[in-house]
Image (tube, rainbow, N blue to C red; front, side, top):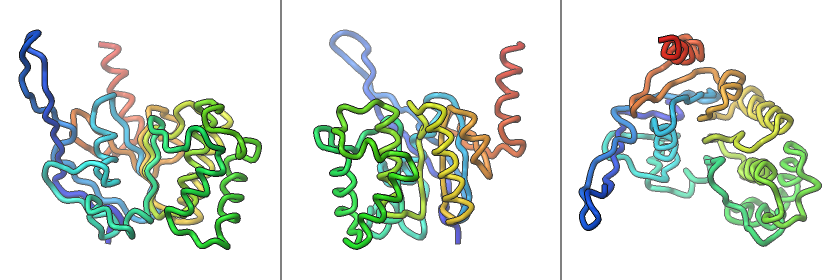
Length: 247
């Protein structure tokens, strides 16, 4: 059985467009259209595409954050949009544009709250937190208020927090946003370890081609809501824009 099985998935949005100062009309915008994708356990799927192509829409559908207009999607046998406790305990959704930390409290409080929400056994909590701090080099930041941290520091903490409940699937949307080169390297090494040594399944969307190139076992492109697998990897993706520039 596939870890993730997507069949004919589409998502459209109805938005209001101003026609004049006093009137508007409703138009339909395509997020993704007729997407098919199957992901095996332990795969790292790189997702590329232009801004607005539909990458985040697809990832949010997989995480159960938005409901598709039509089509089917199963993740480890669950319907993501039912948001069952068992499903939510097996995934982590991490976005470089999304902040889930407690703004006015020390980082350690966000970690402890996360452990409480996911019902991690008390004897394991300190061990899990120590492992996360070590993996992302956060020991000097753990007692600081979130609001005093830089974007890159907060991103590292978000990533570390997302590992505390030891999910089977990691959904990463621009995870290296705001990270310096050292932190990017540390994150990539951690993701490689998750896949190769712990057989975790990972979907990663990024405009940082080093993320995609160094991590992905397969690469897919979303263009205008349509998905296609890139048989020649990043070469196939980048060559299209080289040709466009030369023309």
